[in-house]
Amino acid sequence: MTTTVTDAPVDLGAPLRSDHLHRAAAPLPVLVSPVVRERVDRGREYLRTVLADDDRPVYGAKTGFGALIGFAGREDEADQCDNTLAHLGAGQGPDLPADIARAALLVRAWSLAQGVSGVSADVLDGLAAMFATTFVPAIPRYGSVGASGDLIPLAYATQALRGRGHAYLDGERMPADDALRRAGLTPLTLDGRDALALVNGTSVTTAAAALALDSVRASHRAIQDLTCLLVDVVGGDPGFLDPRLISAYGHPGAATVAERMRATLAGTVPTGERALQEPYSIRCSPQLLGAAEDALRYVDGVVAADLGGVSDNPLFFPGDDLVAHGGNFFGQPAAFAADVLAMVTASLGNLAERQLDLLVDPVRNTGLPPMLAAGPGRQHGLQGVQLATTAFVVEIRRAALPASTQSLPTNLHNQDVVPFGTQAALRAYDVAELLRLLCGSLALGLRQAVHVGGRRPTAPRCAALLDALADAIAPVDPDRPLDADVRAAADLVTGGRY
Image 1 (cartoon, rainbow, N blue to C red):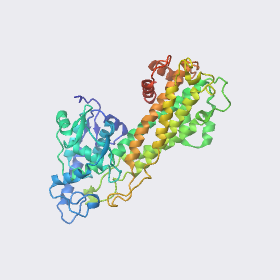
Image 2: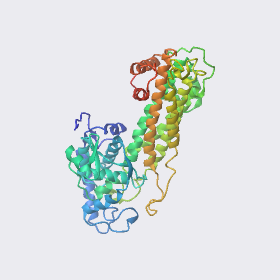
Image 3: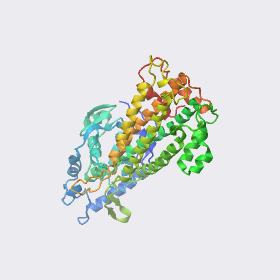
Image 4: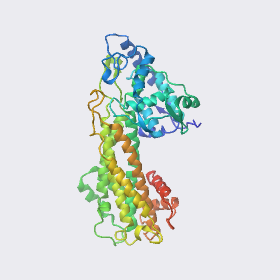
């Protein structure tokens, strides 16, 4: 089993960032510092004081759950843990990707480490030990409504950490107790408050939204560069990026995007053979990509707030002698943000597909062969790739229906409004991968265009991108399956390796 950990530790007492979530996919050192331990212990001691007072109600520690809050819970603390978790074992569907599952637990650990959830420090120690291994709880995809937290998926994660259900180790699915033993981990021992705090937050939603955002951000940057390469390869005029023109437009995202695109196209020499005005997929690209930038900045803010906030109920404030019952587990911000992310993804994907369509069309590509085939008829070039991109765009569009508008009452109307942020975030994660493949498809087309007669880029940065693509991917001559090439091109351009 691989457990080598070489990166700097993630300190649960410091701000949590999205790059930490990416690192969590592999073995990762997580630090429970003395400062964290002291505030968690203080919150735990306050919980004990409150529980000893028969006149002070504490949801989930002394009561049933959800609509059954009016009934007493189990008296034994270990039994109350089982009372919390057993009924939530109702998830269905395929397991969540490992990167989401582990990122969600890192988000959960950070929230609990703020000391207002009343958990035992042993919970954080157990989570930190897990992150140093390749252990991944098996979490079914379907079951959360993103209100009262991601109850069902986080219950599966918690049960796996107790040695119940299933988990993965080094990518192999097995009973969770076997995975814990082979990883050298001790099953978590929890009371009712520990168990409720582990499940009563939107950590799956936050993790999926953050990972999706980073992926869409990478594709957004790639499409800017690929648009510039398209302009250079076909000999277009970069005048549509003129700073005076863009400044008059008035939108900050467009100004940011156009400035970056002007830098990428610096040194390009137009051929003078293109029409006075390019099609919108080129001419309006700074406006479209700029609107996406403005929308992504909104999502940036929501994800940052979620990563820096406590998602749980109730919360315990020893300094004020306050047990606060409320709704900090309600994932509405992430629901809206993930829906916006899906809409941005649909527009970016459509732009990439339209640019590839322009590139393979001899009427609009300045005389290059149809489908960029090296020998049209005997070869078919990018024909199959274009068919696939059409399917990708339709899949993204189909998934872009907002989830945050689908509220459906549940739980005897205790949860009478729900955000469905989990669905929105997981959907955004899925379509972000399709957008990556659209970037790879366009990049492959641009690499092929130069092979079949398109000019070598005249802007140095565009030439560097083309050279990186040419080094990584052979020309399509003769025809061959291109699925792996699309993935390789996607990795290159979204990874910025040029």
